Image (cartoon, rainbow, N blue to C red; front, side, top):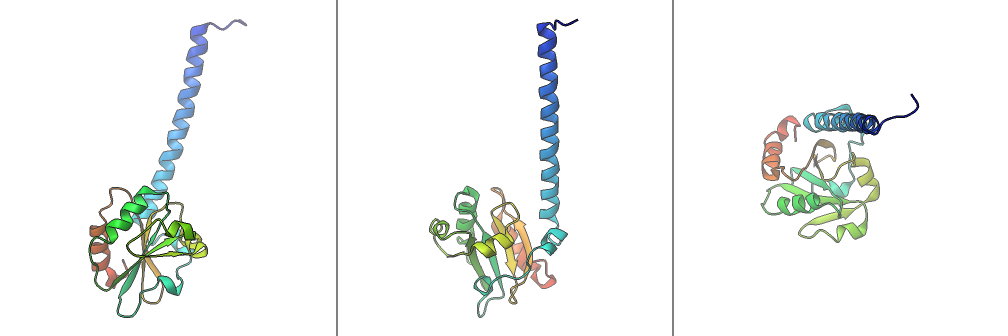
Length: 169
């Protein structure tokens, strides 16, 4: 009974690998579901736990009705794509600001105002970049959406701007 045949050993090893894979897929699925619920429900407790006010440098300026802050990382290709897309179309009465953690990251983005503020970046960061934050004139974060490679940013901004009066921005 002490000898294990080669086919039995291979079968047991395959079973072990299959169980590990099943657990890993379950963990990833659970994390994606949590992320999806957070993205689709901007008023979740996760945002309520975060600082809801931003520094004055990120707020709308005179004559602007709102600001959109794109939290970015210079090593992120989707961040560069989103930053470029935000500046391809004019958005009247809307201030667009990029936010990065370090000054050298700001140099990687051109075409608009990018602020390097590690403290504010850390307060807003939820584990994923890029993330789009809508800021009202008082400096309150009134909405946030994760931005993916296939996100239609003009459509997202149009939807947010149209719903701004109900604080869905």
